[in-house]
Amino acid sequence: MEAVLDRIEDGIAVFIIKPTEEEIEMPQSKLPAHLKEGDLVSISSNGTITKNEVATDDAKARIAAKLERLRKQNGR
Image (cartoon, rainbow, N blue to C red; front, side, top):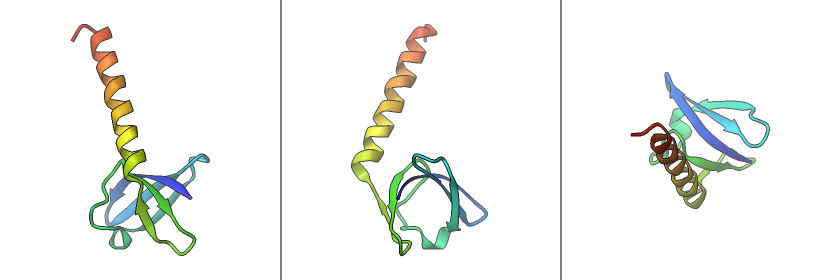
């Protein structure tokens, strides 16, 4: 399943599952060390988490472009 690492609170990682927007939690200790909030991942049926580098980079670029358009609209 595809998901986004939404946040980490008190040692618990919270993922938002796509496209249902369902939340799942797992111990932060089960995460790969390089994972951070906002990363897009695949979670296998056995719980293995793999970062989707291309999708993460694409999403960050889309968000940066949207922020830039908003700044220009607001005269900044």
